[in-house]
Image (cartoon, rainbow, N blue to C red):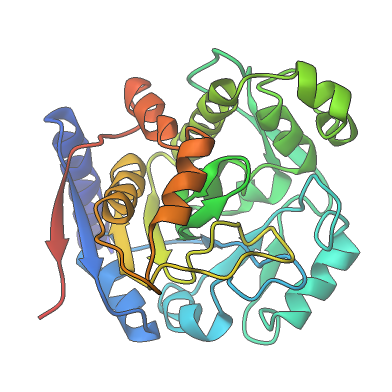
Length: 322
């Protein structure tokens, strides 16, 4: 046990050293299979220990693009993990815990895994380093029950953030309903009913303030775990719309693979670079997703996250494929 703990500490130290020198290791596989998810997890060299939370999006009712239970099963079993989620702040099939449980069942998660709605019975405030907009991060109270987190995100577009990756999964995804309103409003309110009124939207924070708040909240979760977090983006079903949309647009870009790192900024930046640098063609078009990201100034989140010391946009991309 002591040997494994020393290896984990050493691996985390490598991450911090890489970030200090401005470059982080990012691993990639073009294969999107249950086996490749386990393979890329092991390539990171950090063993998930203790009570392991696997943070995913269970998907809005009607959505079919979320990461399927059959895809993630091997990884969750490998780490003896618990699927964790929080309720939404915009109505739909996941704001109410009862309806959220029904959606989780419809999507097949609870037939395979233990699923913990972390804010089902309450919320807690955790410290936040960057207090430019938020004074704390409001998360599901059950976050305190875990020692390690695997941030398993579905990389795709998002109507408000431009794109969703590991930083959105750590910020909006781990926040309680009130915490989501707090991030979306850049610290102005914790009332989700106010956040979505036309009057509030018209007078609310600028897009960049929202993105800055997301980066700060994601950093708060990372720090809460003492850096004991692994970040994985699965680049499949890359619609311009998020898994939180019950009627998402059909993906127009082909699946690209799985990307993982100990550095959240690097893994999101690597995925952005892959999308933006891709040579699209009819039937395999990256332009709609790029337009969605640019419309919301989505790339700014990695800029700001790097500014606050959350990680590095510079990375070394390492293929684990033969």
